[in-house]
Image (tube, rainbow, N blue to C red):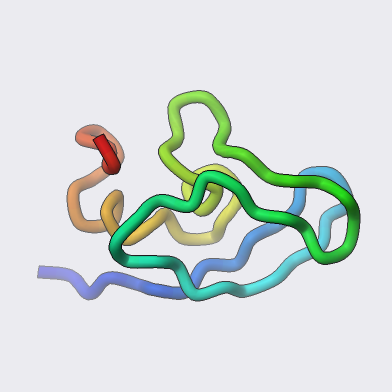
Length: 73
């Protein structure tokens, strides 16, 4: 059994701002407001949360269950 990583580095697709955040373990995060520009990040089609779309590490439920099964369903 592998260890679940709780920190992911988000990269804003609008301005390139990068910030490491601690991901929630009990819910998906559907919105994230960039601190550098007015962009509000939303998951890309097929992803369950902003961490799966813009993060360096997918969210904990996806890490535990794999992308094929998804999460938050």
